[in-house]
Length: 187
Picture 1 (tube, rainbow, N blue to C red):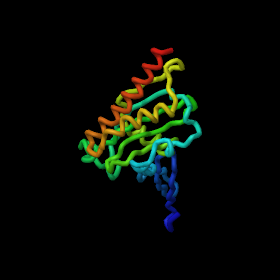
Picture 2 (picture 1 turned 120 degrees about the horizontal axis):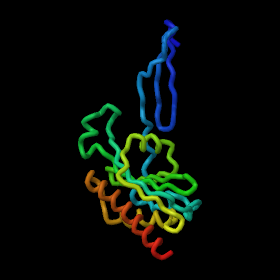
Picture 3 (picture 1 turned 90 degrees about the vertical axis):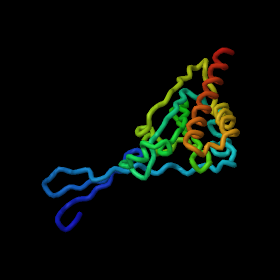
Picture 4 (picture 1 turned 45 degrees about the vertical axis):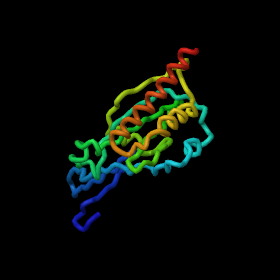
């Protein structure tokens, strides 16, 4: 602590870091809350299979969720939240094992494929769900098939503008939903 007895603490919970202070014989006060930085991107030339790894590729997708998240330099960056370029659009694949994969085309054109990222809960807490699709056992696809849908949706789009990134997230969701529906009809 400081010379005056003030204590400074840092708590890390999920993708958040909370900083507090407490003076002697007083309540603890929150001074700042930070969101952890996102995991590094996969360069756009890297194959999705190499980013995801072979283990678990045949795992069953239980749910597909499309999100829109405000982005900016900080939590109080109101202007970034209001502008279309201040949003991130991404799709999360939730496996039957509760493992999760986040995929998105970023502003620099790189593809992000992050499995079980520690900051995912924090991002999802700040984001809004655009739509979701639960997949029953008779209407499910493997992670490998979902990767193919992502690759198909990504191949034809540069997705560097916010509108293109939003369209890309919708295309990924739509292709996976169509594959789930096709499998359900074949069952």
